[in-house]
Amino acid sequence: MGQFTEAEVHSAFGRADAIVKTSKYIYVFEFKLNGSAKEALDQIDEKGYPIPFLVEEREVIKVGVCFDKETRNIGEWLIQR
Image (cartoon, rainbow, N blue to C red; front, side):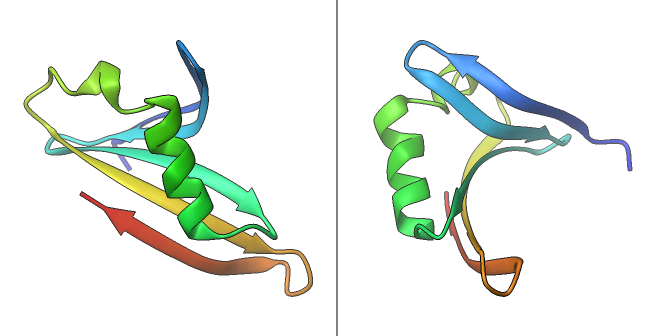
């Protein structure tokens, strides 16, 4: 698909679950199992996962995803610009 994807990307305070880079955007993903998408977004902010990408011209978009153990599918997601 022409997108650059990295998993378990280290930062000074932890690891982002996934980073996806496109020509216009950098998506920072955090995944939770039976947590909440809000908890995932909060972790992105608390751990500073987007900080290394703020010097780029591309817009950074944070994505919190919660997987539901019972349905074995995505339960909810939130996107924050």
